[in-house]
Length: 485
Length: 96
Image (cartoon, rainbow over all chains, first blue to last red; front, side, top):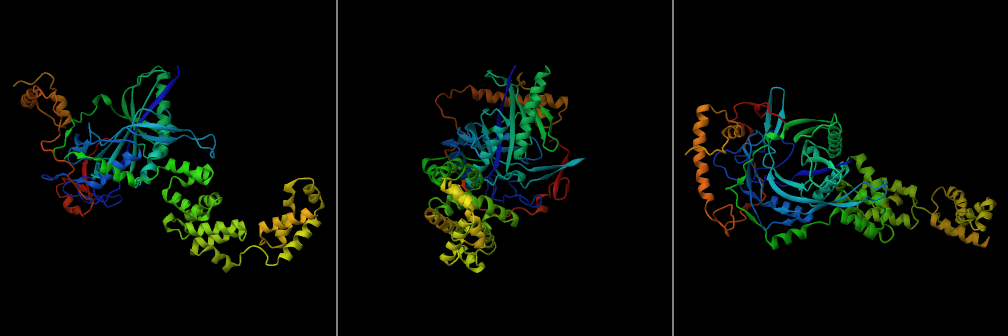
Protein backbone atom coordinates (compact mmCIF):
# COMPACT_ATOMS: atom_id res chain seq x y z
CA UNK A 1 0.00 0.00 0.00
CA UNK A 2 1.19 3.51 -0.74
CA UNK A 3 1.20 6.01 2.10
CA UNK A 4 1.32 9.78 2.18
CA UNK A 5 2.43 11.97 5.04
CA UNK A 6 0.28 14.79 6.39
CA UNK A 7 2.06 17.61 8.19
CA UNK A 8 0.76 20.59 10.13
CA UNK A 9 3.11 23.08 11.73
CA UNK A 10 2.78 25.19 14.86
CA UNK A 11 5.24 28.02 14.49
CA UNK A 12 6.03 30.32 17.39
CA UNK A 13 7.40 33.73 16.49
CA UNK A 14 8.62 36.19 19.12
CA UNK A 15 7.42 39.70 18.37
CA UNK A 16 10.09 42.38 18.46
CA UNK A 17 8.95 44.92 21.07
CA UNK A 18 10.79 47.03 23.63
CA UNK A 19 8.79 45.76 26.58
CA UNK A 20 7.00 42.52 27.40
CA UNK A 21 3.48 41.72 26.29
CA UNK A 22 1.62 42.25 29.57
CA UNK A 23 4.06 44.44 31.49
CA UNK A 24 6.62 47.10 30.63
CA UNK A 25 9.88 45.53 31.78
CA UNK A 26 12.45 45.22 28.97
CA UNK A 27 12.06 42.29 26.57
CA UNK A 28 15.31 40.97 25.14
CA UNK A 29 17.74 38.16 24.51
CA UNK A 30 21.22 37.50 25.83
CA UNK A 31 20.90 39.30 29.15
CA UNK A 32 22.20 37.92 32.45
CA UNK A 33 19.73 35.44 33.97
CA UNK A 34 16.70 36.91 35.74
CA UNK A 35 17.56 40.52 34.99
CA UNK A 36 14.42 41.08 32.86
CA UNK A 37 11.78 40.44 35.48
CA UNK A 38 9.29 42.51 37.42
CA UNK A 39 6.43 41.67 39.77
CA UNK A 40 4.10 40.84 36.84
CA UNK A 41 6.60 38.49 35.19
CA UNK A 42 7.17 36.73 38.51
CA UNK A 43 3.41 36.64 39.20
CA UNK A 44 3.79 38.23 42.60
CA UNK A 45 0.45 38.56 44.40
CA UNK A 46 -1.65 41.57 43.45
CA UNK A 47 -0.04 42.23 40.08
CA UNK A 48 -2.14 42.74 36.96
CA UNK A 49 -1.26 42.41 33.28
CA UNK A 50 -1.52 45.42 30.93
CA UNK A 51 -1.57 44.78 27.20
CA UNK A 52 1.28 46.06 25.02
CA UNK A 53 -0.25 48.00 22.10
CA UNK A 54 2.81 47.41 19.90
CA UNK A 55 2.41 43.63 20.20
CA UNK A 56 -1.18 43.94 18.96
CA UNK A 57 -0.11 46.13 16.05
CA UNK A 58 2.55 43.58 15.12
CA UNK A 59 0.27 40.53 15.15
CA UNK A 60 -2.44 42.33 13.17
CA UNK A 61 0.21 43.28 10.63
CA UNK A 62 1.36 39.65 10.47
CA UNK A 63 -2.24 38.62 9.89
CA UNK A 64 -2.69 41.16 7.11
CA UNK A 65 0.55 40.05 5.45
CA UNK A 66 -0.66 36.45 5.47
CA UNK A 67 -4.16 37.27 4.27
CA UNK A 68 -5.92 36.40 7.53
CA UNK A 69 -9.28 37.71 8.55
CA UNK A 70 -8.73 40.01 11.55
CA UNK A 71 -11.35 39.22 14.17
CA UNK A 72 -13.52 42.24 15.03
CA UNK A 73 -13.33 41.17 18.69
CA UNK A 74 -10.88 38.85 20.40
CA UNK A 75 -10.07 38.00 23.98
CA UNK A 76 -7.42 36.43 26.18
CA UNK A 77 -7.65 33.16 28.07
CA UNK A 78 -5.72 31.40 30.77
CA UNK A 79 -4.13 28.10 29.81
CA UNK A 80 -3.56 26.29 33.08
CA UNK A 81 -0.62 24.01 33.63
CA UNK A 82 1.92 23.39 36.34
CA UNK A 83 5.48 23.68 35.16
CA UNK A 84 8.33 25.84 36.49
CA UNK A 85 8.66 27.81 33.24
CA UNK A 86 5.46 29.65 34.12
CA UNK A 87 5.39 31.35 37.53
CA UNK A 88 1.65 32.03 37.35
CA UNK A 89 0.82 28.36 36.75
CA UNK A 90 -1.02 29.53 33.68
CA UNK A 91 -0.02 31.07 30.41
CA UNK A 92 -2.04 33.94 28.98
CA UNK A 93 -3.03 32.88 25.48
CA UNK A 94 -6.02 32.97 23.14
CA UNK A 95 -8.29 29.96 23.02
CA UNK A 96 -11.56 30.23 21.11
CA UNK A 97 -11.33 33.81 19.85
CA UNK A 98 -7.91 34.29 18.24
CA UNK A 99 -7.03 37.64 16.69
CA UNK A 100 -6.23 36.28 13.19
CA UNK A 101 -8.31 33.66 11.43
CA UNK A 102 -7.50 31.73 8.24
CA UNK A 103 -5.02 33.13 5.75
CA UNK A 104 -2.25 31.32 3.94
CA UNK A 105 1.50 31.16 3.44
CA UNK A 106 2.86 31.13 -0.09
CA UNK A 107 5.76 28.72 -0.45
CA UNK A 108 8.24 27.91 -3.17
CA UNK A 109 9.35 24.31 -3.65
CA UNK A 110 12.83 23.53 -4.93
CA UNK A 111 13.12 24.01 -8.70
CA UNK A 112 14.53 21.48 -11.18
CA UNK A 113 17.87 23.29 -10.93
CA UNK A 114 19.26 26.06 -8.80
CA UNK A 115 18.64 28.64 -11.49
CA UNK A 116 15.04 27.58 -12.13
CA UNK A 117 12.16 28.86 -10.03
CA UNK A 118 10.29 26.05 -8.29
CA UNK A 119 6.57 25.48 -8.05
CA UNK A 120 4.61 27.86 -5.80
CA UNK A 121 1.81 26.70 -3.52
CA UNK A 122 -0.33 28.27 -0.83
CA UNK A 123 -0.47 26.51 2.55
CA UNK A 124 -3.70 27.41 4.35
CA UNK A 125 -3.55 28.67 7.94
CA UNK A 126 -5.98 27.87 10.71
CA UNK A 127 -5.22 30.84 12.91
CA UNK A 128 -2.63 33.11 14.51
CA UNK A 129 -2.95 34.05 18.15
CA UNK A 130 -1.04 36.16 20.64
CA UNK A 131 0.30 34.76 23.88
CA UNK A 132 3.16 35.20 26.30
CA UNK A 133 6.41 33.29 26.07
CA UNK A 134 7.50 31.29 29.12
CA UNK A 135 10.75 31.15 31.07
CA UNK A 136 13.71 29.02 30.13
CA UNK A 137 14.78 25.89 31.97
CA UNK A 138 18.40 24.81 32.03
CA UNK A 139 18.62 21.14 32.83
CA UNK A 140 21.39 19.71 34.92
CA UNK A 141 22.08 16.25 36.24
CA UNK A 142 20.36 16.64 39.57
CA UNK A 143 18.14 19.69 39.12
CA UNK A 144 16.97 22.38 36.72
CA UNK A 145 17.66 26.12 36.81
CA UNK A 146 15.00 28.63 35.83
CA UNK A 147 15.61 31.94 34.06
CA UNK A 148 12.52 34.15 33.66
CA UNK A 149 14.04 36.65 31.23
CA UNK A 150 12.09 35.16 28.33
CA UNK A 151 8.84 34.89 30.30
CA UNK A 152 6.28 37.39 29.07
CA UNK A 153 7.92 38.09 25.71
CA UNK A 154 5.16 38.60 23.14
CA UNK A 155 4.76 35.42 21.14
CA UNK A 156 2.64 34.65 18.10
CA UNK A 157 1.55 31.13 17.36
CA UNK A 158 0.95 30.54 13.67
CA UNK A 159 -1.01 27.34 13.17
CA UNK A 160 -1.22 25.74 9.72
CA UNK A 161 -3.84 23.37 8.47
CA UNK A 162 -2.57 19.80 8.09
CA UNK A 163 -1.89 20.58 4.45
CA UNK A 164 1.76 19.75 3.85
CA UNK A 165 3.01 16.38 2.68
CA UNK A 166 6.79 16.52 2.55
CA UNK A 167 9.67 17.75 4.67
CA UNK A 168 10.61 20.06 1.77
CA UNK A 169 7.22 21.75 1.95
CA UNK A 170 7.57 22.28 5.69
CA UNK A 171 11.02 23.74 5.15
CA UNK A 172 9.72 26.07 2.44
CA UNK A 173 6.80 27.07 4.67
CA UNK A 174 9.04 28.00 7.57
CA UNK A 175 11.42 29.88 5.27
CA UNK A 176 8.52 31.85 3.81
CA UNK A 177 7.15 32.77 7.25
CA UNK A 178 10.61 33.84 8.30
CA UNK A 179 11.10 36.13 5.30
CA UNK A 180 7.63 37.60 5.66
CA UNK A 181 8.05 38.37 9.37
CA UNK A 182 11.47 39.94 8.79
CA UNK A 183 10.07 42.06 5.94
CA UNK A 184 7.22 43.22 8.16
CA UNK A 185 9.64 44.20 10.94
CA UNK A 186 7.59 41.90 13.17
CA UNK A 187 10.41 39.65 14.31
CA UNK A 188 14.06 38.98 13.55
CA UNK A 189 13.20 35.25 13.46
CA UNK A 190 16.65 34.15 14.63
CA UNK A 191 16.16 30.47 15.43
CA UNK A 192 19.38 30.33 17.42
CA UNK A 193 17.91 32.93 19.76
CA UNK A 194 14.59 31.09 19.92
CA UNK A 195 12.79 33.91 18.11
CA UNK A 196 11.32 31.36 15.71
CA UNK A 197 10.40 27.89 16.97
CA UNK A 198 8.59 25.07 15.33
CA UNK A 199 6.62 21.99 16.37
CA UNK A 200 5.32 19.60 13.74
CA UNK A 201 2.28 17.35 13.80
CA UNK A 202 2.95 14.42 11.52
CA UNK A 203 0.84 11.45 10.51
CA UNK A 204 0.67 9.06 7.59
CA UNK A 205 -2.30 7.55 5.82
CA UNK A 206 -2.92 5.39 2.77
CA UNK A 207 -3.04 7.48 -0.40
CA UNK A 208 -6.69 8.28 -1.13
CA UNK A 209 -7.74 8.14 2.53
CA UNK A 210 -9.25 11.43 3.71
CA UNK A 211 -9.22 10.79 7.47
CA UNK A 212 -6.04 11.75 9.30
CA UNK A 213 -3.86 9.02 10.76
CA UNK A 214 -2.50 8.84 14.30
CA UNK A 215 -0.66 12.07 14.98
CA UNK A 216 2.83 12.37 16.39
CA UNK A 217 3.98 15.75 17.66
CA UNK A 218 7.63 16.41 16.95
CA UNK A 219 9.31 18.95 19.20
CA UNK A 220 12.65 20.75 19.39
CA UNK A 221 13.01 21.42 15.69
CA UNK A 222 15.20 24.34 16.62
CA UNK A 223 16.97 25.09 13.38
CA UNK A 224 15.53 25.45 9.92
CA UNK A 225 17.42 22.41 8.65
CA UNK A 226 16.40 20.35 11.71
CA UNK A 227 12.81 21.02 10.66
CA UNK A 228 13.46 19.39 7.31
CA UNK A 229 15.60 16.57 8.66
CA UNK A 230 13.40 15.90 11.69
CA UNK A 231 10.21 15.66 9.65
CA UNK A 232 11.84 13.48 6.99
CA UNK A 233 13.12 11.21 9.76
CA UNK A 234 9.72 11.00 11.44
CA UNK A 235 7.91 10.15 8.19
CA UNK A 236 10.44 7.37 7.58
CA UNK A 237 10.01 6.10 11.13
CA UNK A 238 6.23 5.98 10.82
CA UNK A 239 6.39 4.19 7.46
CA UNK A 240 8.78 1.64 8.97
CA UNK A 241 6.48 0.99 11.95
CA UNK A 242 3.54 0.37 9.63
CA UNK A 243 5.61 -1.71 7.19
CA UNK A 244 6.66 -3.95 10.06
CA UNK A 245 3.01 -4.52 10.91
CA UNK A 246 3.14 -2.24 13.94
CA UNK A 247 0.64 0.34 15.09
CA UNK A 248 1.43 4.02 15.59
CA UNK A 249 0.60 5.60 18.91
CA UNK A 250 -0.24 9.22 19.56
CA UNK A 251 2.81 10.65 21.28
CA UNK A 252 5.18 13.57 21.52
CA UNK A 253 8.67 12.92 20.29
CA UNK A 254 11.80 14.94 20.82
CA UNK A 255 14.08 15.33 17.80
CA UNK A 256 17.81 15.44 18.37
CA UNK A 257 19.36 17.21 15.41
CA UNK A 258 22.88 16.23 16.47
CA UNK A 259 22.22 12.51 16.17
CA UNK A 260 19.31 12.67 13.72
CA UNK A 261 17.16 10.53 16.00
CA UNK A 262 13.99 11.07 18.02
CA UNK A 263 12.65 9.66 21.25
CA UNK A 264 9.24 9.54 22.84
CA UNK A 265 8.66 12.18 25.50
CA UNK A 266 5.36 11.20 26.98
CA UNK A 267 2.29 9.41 25.89
CA UNK A 268 -0.59 11.61 24.80
CA UNK A 269 -2.97 9.50 26.87
CA UNK A 270 -1.99 11.81 29.68
CA UNK A 271 -2.80 14.80 27.48
CA UNK A 272 -2.89 18.05 29.38
CA UNK A 273 -6.19 19.38 30.48
CA UNK A 274 -5.53 23.07 30.20
CA UNK A 275 -8.91 24.20 31.58
CA UNK A 276 -8.94 27.37 29.52
CA UNK A 277 -11.11 30.22 30.74
CA UNK A 278 -11.27 33.92 29.87
CA UNK A 279 -8.66 35.97 31.72
CA UNK A 280 -10.61 38.36 33.90
CA UNK A 281 -7.62 40.72 34.14
CA UNK A 282 -7.51 41.57 30.44
CA UNK A 283 -10.28 43.23 28.48
CA UNK A 284 -11.16 42.05 24.98
CA UNK A 285 -9.70 43.85 21.99
CA UNK A 286 -11.82 45.32 19.20
CA UNK A 287 -10.13 45.95 15.89
CA UNK A 288 -11.96 48.44 13.71
CA UNK A 289 -11.46 49.20 10.01
CA UNK A 290 -9.47 52.39 10.66
CA UNK A 291 -6.90 50.57 12.79
CA UNK A 292 -6.63 47.77 10.26
CA UNK A 293 -6.19 50.15 7.34
CA UNK A 294 -3.55 52.15 9.15
CA UNK A 295 -1.54 48.96 9.65
CA UNK A 296 -2.23 47.75 6.14
CA UNK A 297 -0.65 50.96 4.85
CA UNK A 298 2.50 50.09 6.81
CA UNK A 299 2.69 46.57 5.36
CA UNK A 300 5.59 46.06 2.97
CA UNK A 301 5.37 44.26 -0.36
CA UNK A 302 5.61 40.51 0.27
CA UNK A 303 8.92 38.85 -0.62
CA UNK A 304 7.46 36.67 -3.40
CA UNK A 305 5.57 39.64 -4.88
CA UNK A 306 8.80 41.62 -4.89
CA UNK A 307 10.61 38.74 -6.56
CA UNK A 308 8.00 38.52 -9.33
CA UNK A 309 8.25 42.27 -9.84
CA UNK A 310 12.07 42.17 -10.03
CA UNK A 311 11.91 39.37 -12.61
CA UNK A 312 9.34 41.25 -14.66
CA UNK A 313 10.43 44.90 -14.33
CA UNK A 314 14.20 44.55 -14.09
CA UNK A 315 14.71 41.38 -16.12
CA UNK A 316 17.20 40.05 -13.56
CA UNK A 317 17.86 36.30 -13.55
CA UNK A 318 16.03 34.15 -11.00
CA UNK A 319 19.29 33.19 -9.25
CA UNK A 320 20.07 36.84 -8.55
CA UNK A 321 16.58 37.50 -7.20
CA UNK A 322 16.81 34.49 -4.91
CA UNK A 323 19.93 36.03 -3.37
CA UNK A 324 18.42 39.52 -3.07
CA UNK A 325 14.87 38.77 -1.95
CA UNK A 326 15.43 37.08 1.45
CA UNK A 327 16.94 40.30 2.77
CA UNK A 328 14.72 43.30 2.48
CA UNK A 329 17.59 45.80 2.85
CA UNK A 330 19.55 44.04 0.13
CA UNK A 331 16.62 44.05 -2.28
CA UNK A 332 15.95 47.73 -1.48
CA UNK A 333 19.62 48.47 -2.16
CA UNK A 334 19.34 46.67 -5.49
CA UNK A 335 16.19 48.47 -6.52
CA UNK A 336 17.53 51.91 -5.62
CA UNK A 337 20.75 51.23 -7.52
CA UNK A 338 19.02 49.66 -10.54
CA UNK A 339 16.74 52.69 -10.84
CA UNK A 340 19.72 55.07 -10.76
CA UNK A 341 21.71 52.94 -13.19
CA UNK A 342 18.95 53.15 -15.77
CA UNK A 343 17.37 50.75 -18.26
CA UNK A 344 19.26 47.62 -19.23
CA UNK A 345 21.72 47.84 -16.39
CA UNK A 346 19.79 46.12 -13.59
CA UNK A 347 21.34 42.73 -14.23
CA UNK A 348 24.84 44.16 -13.92
CA UNK A 349 23.81 45.91 -10.69
CA UNK A 350 22.35 42.62 -9.40
CA UNK A 351 25.54 40.74 -10.26
CA UNK A 352 27.74 43.23 -8.43
CA UNK A 353 25.54 42.96 -5.33
CA UNK A 354 25.05 39.20 -5.35
CA UNK A 355 28.71 38.43 -6.04
CA UNK A 356 31.07 41.23 -5.10
CA UNK A 357 29.22 43.22 -2.48
CA UNK A 358 28.10 40.17 -0.50
CA UNK A 359 31.57 38.63 -0.70
CA UNK A 360 33.26 41.81 0.55
CA UNK A 361 30.69 42.26 3.33
CA UNK A 362 31.11 38.69 4.48
CA UNK A 363 34.92 38.94 4.37
CA UNK A 364 34.79 42.18 6.36
CA UNK A 365 32.09 40.70 8.65
CA UNK A 366 29.96 43.80 8.10
CA UNK A 367 26.20 44.21 7.75
CA UNK A 368 24.86 45.90 4.63
CA UNK A 369 23.98 48.99 6.67
CA UNK A 370 27.69 49.52 7.36
CA UNK A 371 28.70 49.30 3.69
CA UNK A 372 30.40 52.41 2.31
CA UNK A 373 29.26 51.60 -1.19
CA UNK A 374 25.89 53.24 -1.86
CA UNK A 375 23.22 52.42 -4.45
CA UNK A 376 24.30 55.62 -6.23
CA UNK A 377 28.01 54.79 -6.32
CA UNK A 378 27.31 51.25 -7.55
CA UNK A 379 25.03 52.63 -10.27
CA UNK A 380 27.79 55.00 -11.30
CA UNK A 381 30.31 52.16 -11.45
CA UNK A 382 28.01 50.12 -13.68
CA UNK A 383 27.53 53.22 -15.82
CA UNK A 384 31.30 53.59 -16.32
CA UNK A 385 31.60 49.96 -17.37
CA UNK A 386 28.64 50.10 -19.73
CA UNK A 387 30.00 53.29 -21.31
CA UNK A 388 33.27 51.49 -21.95
CA UNK A 389 35.35 53.87 -19.84
CA UNK A 390 36.15 51.12 -17.37
CA UNK A 391 37.09 47.52 -18.12
CA UNK A 392 35.75 44.66 -16.06
CA UNK A 393 39.12 43.69 -14.62
CA UNK A 394 39.85 47.26 -13.58
CA UNK A 395 36.30 47.65 -12.29
CA UNK A 396 36.96 44.90 -9.73
CA UNK A 397 39.85 46.94 -8.43
CA UNK A 398 37.73 50.10 -8.37
CA UNK A 399 34.99 48.25 -6.52
CA UNK A 400 37.41 46.97 -3.89
CA UNK A 401 38.71 50.51 -3.32
CA UNK A 402 35.16 51.91 -3.15
CA UNK A 403 34.28 49.28 -0.56
CA UNK A 404 37.16 50.34 1.68
CA UNK A 405 37.09 54.12 1.22
CA UNK A 406 33.56 54.92 0.11
CA UNK A 407 34.93 57.06 -2.73
CA UNK A 408 32.93 57.67 -5.90
CA UNK A 409 34.05 55.30 -8.69
CA UNK A 410 35.19 58.17 -10.94
CA UNK A 411 37.47 59.39 -8.14
CA UNK A 412 39.02 55.91 -7.73
CA UNK A 413 39.50 55.59 -11.49
CA UNK A 414 41.27 58.95 -11.59
CA UNK A 415 43.38 58.26 -8.50
CA UNK A 416 44.56 54.83 -9.67
CA UNK A 417 44.76 55.73 -13.36
CA UNK A 418 42.48 52.90 -14.35
CA UNK A 419 40.56 54.62 -17.11
CA UNK A 420 40.16 52.60 -20.28
CA UNK A 421 40.98 53.76 -23.83
CA UNK A 422 44.27 55.19 -25.05
CA UNK A 423 43.94 58.88 -25.67
CA UNK A 424 45.19 58.56 -29.20
CA UNK A 425 42.55 57.17 -31.56
CA UNK A 426 45.18 56.86 -34.24
CA UNK A 427 47.25 54.58 -31.99
CA UNK A 428 44.24 52.31 -31.43
CA UNK A 429 43.56 52.14 -35.14
CA UNK A 430 47.19 51.18 -35.77
CA UNK A 431 46.95 48.32 -33.24
CA UNK A 432 43.78 47.12 -34.93
CA UNK A 433 45.35 47.19 -38.39
CA UNK A 434 48.37 45.23 -37.12
CA UNK A 435 46.13 42.65 -35.48
CA UNK A 436 44.04 42.09 -38.63
CA UNK A 437 47.18 41.87 -40.80
CA UNK A 438 48.71 39.29 -38.43
CA UNK A 439 45.74 36.90 -38.63
CA UNK A 440 44.66 36.15 -42.21
CA UNK A 441 42.87 32.96 -41.11
CA UNK A 442 40.48 34.86 -38.84
CA UNK A 443 40.06 37.50 -41.53
CA UNK A 444 38.97 34.83 -44.03
CA UNK A 445 36.55 33.35 -41.49
CA UNK A 446 35.06 36.73 -40.71
CA UNK A 447 34.60 37.50 -44.36
CA UNK A 448 32.94 34.12 -44.80
CA UNK A 449 30.30 35.31 -42.33
CA UNK A 450 31.59 33.99 -38.99
CA UNK A 451 30.98 37.05 -36.82
CA UNK A 452 32.67 35.61 -33.74
CA UNK A 453 35.96 35.48 -35.61
CA UNK A 454 36.29 39.17 -34.75
CA UNK A 455 37.23 38.18 -31.21
CA UNK A 456 40.51 36.72 -32.46
CA UNK A 457 41.67 40.25 -33.36
CA UNK A 458 40.79 41.75 -30.00
CA UNK A 459 43.36 39.93 -27.85
CA UNK A 460 46.45 41.43 -29.49
CA UNK A 461 44.83 44.91 -29.46
CA UNK A 462 44.06 44.68 -25.74
CA UNK A 463 47.59 43.43 -25.16
CA UNK A 464 49.06 46.34 -27.10
CA UNK A 465 46.88 48.70 -25.07
CA UNK A 466 48.05 47.05 -21.82
CA UNK A 467 44.48 46.14 -20.99
CA UNK A 468 43.25 49.72 -20.96
CA UNK A 469 41.78 49.86 -24.43
CA UNK A 470 38.07 50.59 -24.50
CA UNK A 471 36.53 47.30 -25.67
CA UNK A 472 33.58 49.08 -27.26
CA UNK A 473 35.88 51.33 -29.23
CA UNK A 474 38.08 48.37 -30.20
CA UNK A 475 35.03 46.52 -31.50
CA UNK A 476 33.84 49.53 -33.46
CA UNK A 477 37.27 50.22 -34.96
CA UNK A 478 37.80 46.58 -35.92
CA UNK A 479 34.38 46.39 -37.60
CA UNK A 480 35.04 49.58 -39.49
CA UNK A 481 38.42 48.35 -40.72
CA UNK A 482 37.12 44.84 -41.52
CA UNK A 483 34.27 46.29 -43.53
CA UNK A 484 36.85 48.01 -45.72
CA UNK A 485 39.33 45.14 -45.81
CA UNK B 1 -23.81 17.87 48.21
CA UNK B 2 -22.34 14.59 47.03
CA UNK B 3 -19.71 14.56 44.31
CA UNK B 4 -21.10 14.14 40.82
CA UNK B 5 -20.15 10.84 39.26
CA UNK B 6 -18.11 12.45 36.50
CA UNK B 7 -15.73 14.16 38.94
CA UNK B 8 -12.43 12.29 38.89
CA UNK B 9 -10.66 13.61 41.97
CA UNK B 10 -7.49 11.62 41.19
CA UNK B 11 -7.19 13.33 37.82
CA UNK B 12 -7.82 16.76 39.30
CA UNK B 13 -5.17 16.11 41.95
CA UNK B 14 -2.69 14.98 39.34
CA UNK B 15 -3.23 18.03 37.16
CA UNK B 16 -2.74 20.23 40.22
CA UNK B 17 0.37 18.30 41.29
CA UNK B 18 -1.27 17.59 44.66
CA UNK B 19 -0.81 14.39 46.66
CA UNK B 20 -4.14 13.98 48.44
CA UNK B 21 -4.83 11.59 51.29
CA UNK B 22 -7.91 9.35 51.14
CA UNK B 23 -9.64 11.59 53.66
CA UNK B 24 -8.81 14.72 51.61
CA UNK B 25 -10.10 13.10 48.46
CA UNK B 26 -13.48 12.58 50.07
CA UNK B 27 -13.56 16.08 51.53
CA UNK B 28 -12.47 17.86 48.34
CA UNK B 29 -14.73 15.73 46.15
CA UNK B 30 -17.66 17.01 48.17
CA UNK B 31 -16.46 20.62 48.04
CA UNK B 32 -15.75 20.54 44.31
CA UNK B 33 -19.07 18.78 43.88
CA UNK B 34 -20.93 21.69 45.38
CA UNK B 35 -19.05 24.11 43.10
CA UNK B 36 -20.01 21.98 40.12
CA UNK B 37 -23.57 21.87 41.41
CA UNK B 38 -23.64 25.64 41.38
CA UNK B 39 -22.37 25.71 37.79
CA UNK B 40 -24.98 23.13 36.87
CA UNK B 41 -27.63 25.45 38.23
CA UNK B 42 -26.26 28.29 36.06
CA UNK B 43 -26.22 25.99 33.05
CA UNK B 44 -29.99 25.62 33.35
CA UNK B 45 -30.58 29.30 32.61
CA UNK B 46 -31.89 29.87 29.11
CA UNK B 47 -29.35 32.12 27.34
CA UNK B 48 -30.63 31.75 23.78
CA UNK B 49 -30.08 34.96 21.86
CA UNK B 50 -27.63 36.40 24.39
CA UNK B 51 -24.18 37.11 23.02
CA UNK B 52 -21.47 35.43 25.10
CA UNK B 53 -19.14 37.87 26.85
CA UNK B 54 -15.86 37.35 28.64
CA UNK B 55 -16.43 40.32 30.92
CA UNK B 56 -19.21 42.05 32.78
CA UNK B 57 -18.30 45.50 31.43
CA UNK B 58 -18.47 46.52 27.77
CA UNK B 59 -14.90 47.75 28.00
CA UNK B 60 -12.38 47.18 25.20
CA UNK B 61 -8.86 48.08 24.11
CA UNK B 62 -7.19 48.77 27.42
CA UNK B 63 -3.48 48.91 26.77
CA UNK B 64 -0.23 50.80 27.28
CA UNK B 65 2.36 52.11 24.83
CA UNK B 66 5.45 49.97 24.32
CA UNK B 67 7.79 51.97 26.53
CA UNK B 68 10.19 49.77 28.45
CA UNK B 69 11.32 50.48 31.97
CA UNK B 70 13.80 48.70 34.24
CA UNK B 71 12.57 45.77 36.26
CA UNK B 72 13.67 44.17 39.50
CA UNK B 73 17.24 43.76 40.60
CA UNK B 74 18.26 40.09 40.44
CA UNK B 75 18.60 39.87 44.22
CA UNK B 76 15.04 41.12 44.63
CA UNK B 77 13.73 38.87 41.89
CA UNK B 78 15.21 35.82 43.57
CA UNK B 79 14.44 36.78 47.15
CA UNK B 80 11.52 34.34 47.48
CA UNK B 81 13.27 31.44 45.77
CA UNK B 82 13.80 28.50 48.16
CA UNK B 83 17.08 27.77 46.41
CA UNK B 84 19.18 29.58 43.82
CA UNK B 85 22.36 29.08 41.85
CA UNK B 86 24.03 31.19 39.17
CA UNK B 87 21.27 33.78 39.63
CA UNK B 88 18.66 31.20 38.65
CA UNK B 89 15.97 29.48 40.63
CA UNK B 90 16.73 25.86 41.45
CA UNK B 91 13.82 23.48 40.89
CA UNK B 92 13.65 19.68 41.06
CA UNK B 93 14.76 18.04 37.84
CA UNK B 94 11.90 18.16 35.34
CA UNK B 95 11.33 16.54 32.01
CA UNK B 96 11.81 18.30 28.61
